[in-house]
Length: 424
Ligand code: 4AD
Ligand code: MG
Image (cartoon, rainbow, N blue to C red):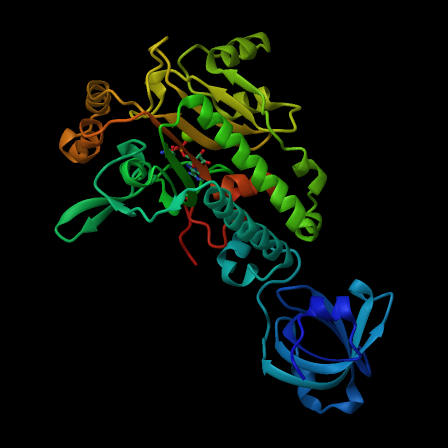
């Protein structure tokens, strides 16, 4: 007999089955043991009549791994309405005193993260993340992009030297990349439309619910693309992801309490406002903020209140944004950039048209305290066949957190790296 997944058993209800998995719940009565088994697909109740088996079965506890054979039976009281009358049971691995039980502190659950990722909630979230990565790739590949593999180790700072992790690189210093962008910019001169999905690293000393020190970064970069086309690409990307996840992950979304209907509504056009307008609006709402300050969480929340789609804020002051963003030639105090802000969850995308004027780039790099020597290669891109181009970066965990409505970004990644934690 072939093994069936628990979902297959629930859906097809064959008479005889062979299944395997881990004990999710167990209730031992005088002459019966009720085992709820779990595998990657679902959970299923199995009933063991003690008299048919030896003493060994008394050793079965939560998280023991088992192979079970038996007959299916409809049972309304069982989860999913089916149960297995067990005829054969093999203990594959015992599990004595599993350290996680019902009400545990967050810290303990993080210490036992390697075991906690077996929880159903995290399992369903990880399935949605797998879809998020799959549909991100699909979106770009369908539009003729090439997937490329930029380096993780770098000598340049894409997002400012202050938040780079330094590493020992043989006898020299190097850094973990904050973004693949600068390398993607080099790659568009041959491939024109590229994207990468890589880990990015940020040494940000923040203890917030939206910062990770290591996160997965989805970044496209496009030759000849201007700022307005970029905004369209961003909207289409987010909308595509939401539609596809709503279609394909209904069960997982419902399990974690997210209505797929809300995601179907995330369609272009998204509301857009300039930074200037955002400041005016915030002032009218009675918030003290002056032009030139970056938007903080509370201000982003005020701006997106009541929206059912993300908000795109454009044209931020050049002084608070990265060196590579193009000065708006009509108003050089601002740059052709945007943040996409998810209601209640903050920034999920940062994008811009890139500066093409080599002198402006040099001026901004020097002002940021960078050594031009490390950027000669990047400046070469402006020296040899310069073109207009744009791109964006989306944090996979930021998007997932918003899609799954997670309280904290750490649940959007199996092993979160945060200010205080790199174990396990
Ligand atoms: O806005 P950021 O810093 O932009 C860049 O890195 C550009 N070079 C991207 C590009 O144009 N190719 O980061 C982009 C996105 C953010 O919008 C956010 O979603 C995510 O990366 N992000 C983080 N996610 C989790 N933890 C952090 N500490 C993050 N920092 C940024
Ligand atoms: Mg940003």
